[in-house]
Length: 170
Image (tube, rainbow, N blue to C red; front, side, top):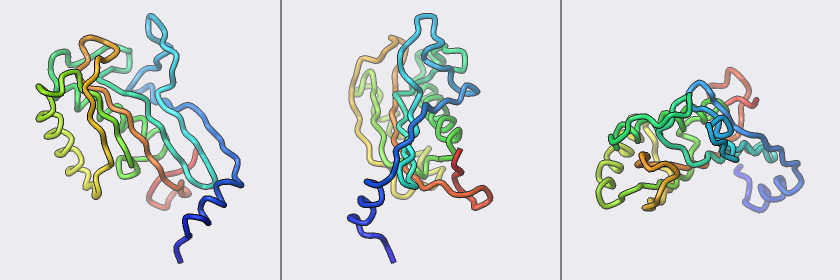
């Protein structure tokens, strides 16, 4: 029998909230490690009554050394951005199937939206996502002039014990 929304809220209301920063330096450096440090975490993990929520900060085509990569190539920047988010999710035992929402910032939405949508659709289809995450696309000036795309993501899942085939709690 499925829990009612009221039951779920009641469980969550009585639960302690634990939070900690998300990191995966094998794919993406930490913002505080930039030559001019930036004050944010790559993401936050929130554990709340058996539910885990991952809030992935705006992520772009940045490598493990903090350098922008694929300058001038929107599609390659998009793929690197998705790779970085995949690595952050994996560091917490999650995957794109757990992503419920993305916010996508494009430097030039008129020029790049078609390529963006083609890359995103191909990526989601390759992963077998159904349904696709909720999403918003916004034209924005990004933090580095060479960046063409930045994506935030929210994932939600219930951690399972090792060996059950999905996420594990750390």
